[in-house]
Length: 320
Image (cartoon, rainbow, N blue to C red; front, side):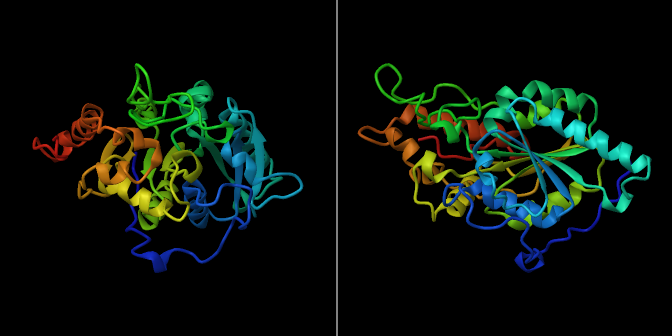
C-alpha cells in the first residue's frame, strides 16, 4: 500500500485545537480517563462523525433528552456496534453514489466501546467487519473491567489486580489470576491498515496517531488507556498522573502498526512498576498486610518479556 506519510501535524500542546466537540457536564464519573481521550480524539476527527456507541460506561454520555455530542450518535447493544457501523457506512456510500449526499458531507464512522465489549462480547462482530475491510474507526476505552455494572472482571483485567469478581483472599490472595488479553495482537492478525495504543496523558502522541490514521481506508483501531477513579480507587484528580505512570513504567506501551509493521512512539523510562501499583487501591493487597513479592515479580517479568525483544536482553525492571 502506497501511503504519503505526512510530517507530524502536532509538535506540542499549542497545536491541539481549542474547539470542543463534546460538551462538559455529562453523567460520566469525574476524572474518567477514557472521556479525556475521546475529547482529544474528537478534536482531530472533527464534527463530521457518526458515533456508534456500544453499551458500556459511555452509554451515560447521551441520556435522553440530553446529548453532549455535536456529531451524530447511535446506541447499540454490546455485541453489535461493528454491525451497526457496517450499515451506516454502506448507507452513506450508496447515498453518495446516488448523488443524494455530497462527497464533502461524508461522515467518519466511529465505533465507541469499552474493553468488555471489545475483548469479549463484541469480538465476533468485530472480526467479521475486519474481514470485510470496513472503512471505520474503532475506539476502545480500556478501563480494564466491566466498570458501569459494578466493576466486574473482564478479559482485559490485569493480573494481580482486584475487581468485585476477583477479590483477593483465601486460596487466591493475589487477586485476578488471569493475564490480560492482547486485543492489539488479535486485531493485527486480521491485518488492518492502521492500529495504535494511546493514553490521555500523551495528547500530542494521541493527536498525531488520529491524524495519521486518516490517510488509510479500512479498519483503524485505537485502544486508549482509561484510568477509572471509581473502579481503580484513586483520587479523580490523579487520572493523568496514573496514565503517565503506566507509560513510564512500560506497563502500557504506546505503539502503532501500519499495515502490520509495528513501532513504538514512546520509549519509557522504566520507572519501577511499584510506583504505578501503589497509586491505586485495586493493588493494595499486593503490599498490605504482607508484600506479595511473587505476584509483583510476575508483573515485572511480563513487562520485561514484552519490551526485551525491542530494546535488549537486560532486565528493565528490578526483579527483587
